Image (cartoon, helix red, strand yellow):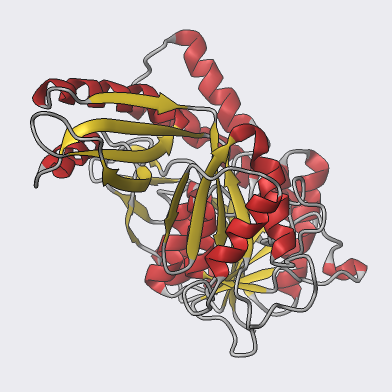
Length: 421
């Protein structure tokens, strides 16, 4: 029927029974007449366990040796899953990332895929085998094992689907798709039948635990449309349906959603540089230094300062990941001597609440509706930024979950029928 690439995350292969269940799902797909390539992650929490083992030996393990260590997790998965398929009478073969042809750069712990030589995979498919590939890993030009960073197995699957010109790409997780909000926060959140690349990218950047950013960027770059499904759902041979959320380049014409989802990021820090000289080049100097320190910034806002005897001033606020706060403050404090009178303040008791939707820019009053939802709950907005499909507000961390629920209700995202203005 076609060539299918499937990916199963660590929670899908955490136990022997889960390996058997995944094997049955793969076997069913093969029996439908498909060629099947499967990308699999390390089982359960093994990657975290391996990191802890390394830390028990040294506080500063080399990046190269960490890649050698971490790559073993996926190799365990591919061997066990292949054995489970053999038990079902399915001819299958396991391949490590290098064996599957993944060629990467030499940036250990966060390598990028440069090319995939698919010759070995195609030979195995031609022989009628299911091919089980270790995600998250490849090999650089020096012959060293590399890993792709967190979420790298998703990127492996998307890239394989592109290089193999797959007819279908399925990403199996422990949830049955992308929801309008985190169901643990908003019980009325509903699963979306489809969502665009740009919406998923914005939701992920806004803190939603949907997919790793780089994998969606790869999908958009290569035009790979894929589906997010649950590996825990009833198996097709048990009467279950393969039903999840399709991630597409463009939403269907009959999809009139204004807002697709609400996300919250509680792991942010708010930094403000006060009293900077209001002249060309100052913002460049500050953000160049932060960029050189490899700090990703968000919600950047500049406003007029209170002024001083040396001329007009400006205040620049931005957010960053809380894990980057210490480094960001070091960078900012090093800059202060260049700008006499300037100072830096920060706040970690904040959270970012965002709405994302392809209709944000093309419909009037969307921002006002979001702000109204927060005002009705007496939730103060401390910073606002937006793009064509996203509006983000910084609020007190203690009010963040309440804010998510209020905004979700205001846009009636839990309703089956979309809102059309």
